[in-house]
Picture (cartoon, rainbow, N blue to C red):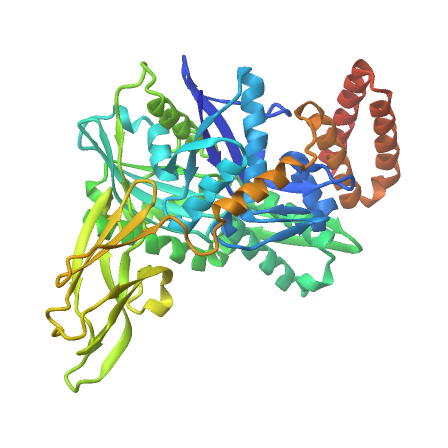
Length: 563
């Protein structure tokens, strides 16, 4: 069985392609969306999902979110006694999703298709594969999120020649892709995006405006209070999608917060972020060589795309309203399920070939002499241009800079800047030359071959010797080696993770602790409820626990409606 997974910045989902099409699995709390949050309890147990999300308020130093933005880096986060890399935190989320799938299917999951932002770099894609490996599953394919969304909308069933623009604004990343379907092939014409733009950034704008209007600073609040204020403002952001004006009236610590904002003010605050969204849209259209009237449909996915300002931006730029009849939170996961069905060659699906593109330009560092004979080094010479359909192979030839040069150092970069200093160094290869030969005779042919799994092969062949020198860039800077993966896999296997069957109890206690932090007048009552529920857990009587859990949850529901 191959499952499809949307490993999101704020929420993650899992499903498969069944008899009635793509189907998502519910988690232990009966919900499709599992917050991409990890926390460590006082007893050392790892908590993932809703309970961990509530602990962002009550235990901010032991909880972490938005780590998808750190994929492909060596950043570590300390939670209690342990330090975790982004791949490990993602692996813990994946483990939780796989446990939900295995509970529903009654079998062990061995393979998965995982969605990634179209604009993820090679390092970020490889880090996602490592996360799957650490979670104990083989990643059959990484599918770009916009491509997955197109599958969820049934692009593969549309008539040939239809062109779709997929606008994907999630909690932490923004992607835009232009796709076309013809003769059973879903071809990506162009992708662009911003890996540090999402709903969280619009929330940051609200928080800054609120503090500024009330003449407060973030440092005036404790980490717990900041988390509480941020959660309240998240509700304000959502309400602004339905109402023209929203008032925030709450108690945060010792401060009473009374603040009002309307849609026009929010639009003004968001203008810099809107400009950042326009740039990838324009770049994708430019790279695809299309005019707005040549698009058949525009699809919105990602939870943050619900904001009215997104629809208004699309309407202004393209002169039409976008499609949004598939749940924006679920579209990518449903598409990943379709991709999983295609991978397993499900008989109900017609054969569809999914193409992909190289999201960044790949090239080498060169030097050039100007008319006065001065040398300028550090220039970027592209070999494979961004948005080239993969797999792809391209070749350029390069000469040494001077006579009697003994070797040519080939530095491989990824990026879009004309200066290599502003791009990402992927690796380097040294090619011996024959110093007795002329510059022209020491010319070197350099070939880049990039495959669908993000592996770049660099081949350099001096014309004089005809010997071939090769560099295989599977390992990007900052990523784990195979030995490090084995070591961290062993360490993760020793972690104590709350059993799936107990997650309802853990989540309920975490929710109560969050409310204890938020609602000062009800603290005594909440503490009494928490003690009583813990006592019922100690009884180990499942019927007693179930009855108490139901009444406890209902009491918390009533309390939250009063806040």
